[in-house]
Image 1 (cartoon, rainbow, N blue to C red):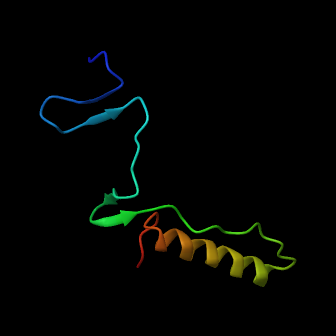
Image 2 (image 1 turned 90 degrees about the vertical axis):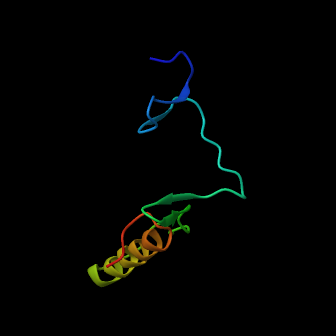
Length: 73
């Protein structure tokens, strides 16, 4: 066990972040070759019926997929 907050275990198979991980504007985070980035804002739903709620939910799913936070089909 290391006495530092951030370290890579011997062999490089696991990196532990116990402190802050700062990704600058020049950096990027990828998962399985897909860039992961913050999702666009999804406004709070004001849906008054099921079809409107479905529309709001589908908009949220689209934003999560576009941000790389959810797999696309």
